[in-house]
Image (cartoon, rainbow, N blue to C red; front, side):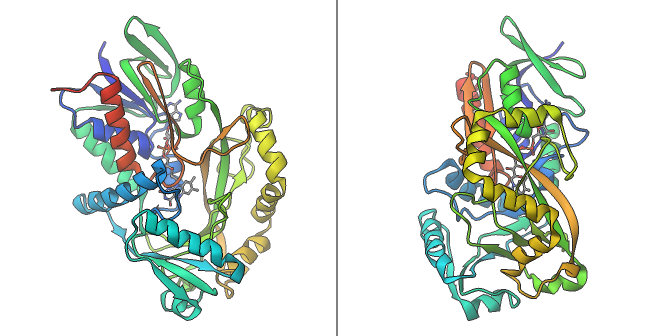
Length: 403
Ligand SMILES: Cc1cc2nc3c(=O)[nH]c(=O)nc-3n(C[C@H](O)[C@H](O)[C@H](O)COP(=O)(O)OP(=O)(O)OC[C@H]3O[C@@H](n4cnc5c(N)ncnc54)[C@H](O)[C@@H]3O)c2cc1C
């Protein structure tokens, strides 16, 4: 029976990027296990495909640092491996005068995060970038781009395998036992023996930590993000990427428009509480997941504070006209007949027991283990940088640095 030095749980972009960084360490016996039949089956394969610039994040946060570094690393990786991408830039649009302070704050954050080439736009200049947009002012962010993160992940997986590491698909982690210095990962297939473990389980990461005897300190609450597709004869309404000024309390709220790397145009996502962790349909339901959400003190506190906002998201989810009205704030001429329901992704949002949404990446270390418990957007953009950080943390803490 082979014993690995490190086993990674989760074949999303964070687990894969960590494995890729570790695969550069000579002689390391490395395995990655993934529950699904393919990599990137959950958050990574169902996201907006945006390479974020690093505009939004609190200067000095892990998100800010890893997004800026990771974005450049992602562009380099795509060039090197001939993965289609487009550094098309994006605009952020203030539709009312009252959003101007928020826009100014974004510009300030962008400067502090060392973004290059941000342009302040007046109403007329906005139209030079996006002729169908309505707004009083905006920003042009040239460093934003688009890519297919599934393709990036598949390339990561190929390189990991080429290095001699093992990727086991259809292999679901079920629990862990210790045997001397070995950790035995029980799965639906053969057990995996390893000296160390890295949990990159996304929507299941808190449960995986608990199965390993580690208190995650947070619970994952799933929020579904639903998209509409813009019909091809209306693609001209969106050249590239069009975003509203975010609400600082809920930066992931606010419908935006995205050109996909395959040429499609999407609007969304919203953020609706999901009654199932991997719940991609409005009808998706799991009693276990729902009970875990509604019996969590953190969720009850969050719900009490932001009930109105949550109900608004549900309303827009079930009422296409309400969704269209949100879109029309940015592009007044878009109509209900121009869009059809598209796909959805589910965000793994870590929530603290006091009701605080964990904003930054959260990585918890325990004896012979590392647990990644919050890797929200822009973790796909930042994946190469986060992967390198996790790999160096692992090699140091697990004493695996070769001379
Ligand atoms: C709607 C939406 C839009 C987004 N847009 C963007 C964007 O434009 N740009 C950006 O940078 N980021 C974006 N993000 C965020 C980004 O997609 C995530 O931050 C990133 O994909 C997280 O990667 P991950 O590897 O942590 O999680 P995941 O991709 O969810 O991977 C976790 C993996 O763990 C596996 N797993 C779970 N349990 C087990 C188990 N028991 N055993 C084995 N395997 C297990 C799962 O099957 C899964 O493959 C978006 C996210 C969403 C949901």
